[in-house]
Figure 1 (cartoon, rainbow, N blue to C red):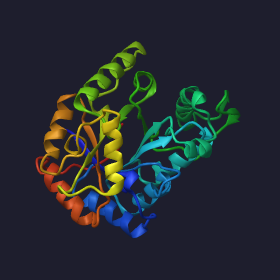
Figure 2 (cartoon, rainbow, N blue to C red):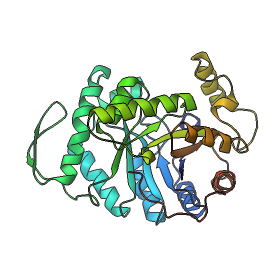
Figure 3 (cartoon, rainbow, N blue to C red):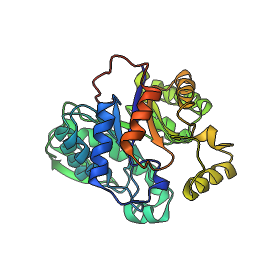
Figure 4 (cartoon, helix red, strand yellow):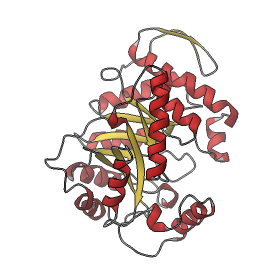
Length: 315
């Protein structure tokens, strides 16, 4: 059975309002009440999106069951020990509901300045930092000497629930997919992932995992999936995004990228047939009323899932 979550605050290029705790509370609580499996938050250091760890801590405090996830959190440029204790604290405060999808970071000059990492450095720092997170969670004093960090007998506390949050990877290049197979617990495709791209991504990831003598379970393949609440004229930001995707020949039209609610179940079935099982649904336009929108979304995509399951982590 597939797992379906929602991305808050919506399709982030269109986010035009600063973070509002009342809106966040409503979205998280309605998502849990309506039976969604996960509540995910993106990272945009230079955009009007709350820090994902802060936003998810708030969501954890106002919910009890729904899984919580980052989609996605930039890893290169973050001190591994500080990130380890931050995520472990959130995992414990949420009762072990956290999944962390990580990425190399956006190709954006502002965000590159914020993280202080040159593009050519990102991959090597990522490959070093992700296994180090697991060591800091699962071991006692850790000694490590590398480009990302130097530790001598460092014991980071608190430890998370169990072995720690599941670590998923984003990305679509062959190198990123192979990295997911080598070291990740799962893969979360971007909003432009097509069924054909999903099928290919799963094959590349599975092959890389097999070469590393490991495996990613069937529930470890997912994607962000945009949708439209109703068929209405696009706003200027949404039109700009669509025009860019058309120019890059990623999509041909808005229905191909963000289907309306009546067509969304067909898109999810296509992606399921391509090998995906976790879907993070994101409204292409910022909802005027999150409760109304999420209730309609649940009616469109969750009606076949009975009984409702207790949501947990995705690892």
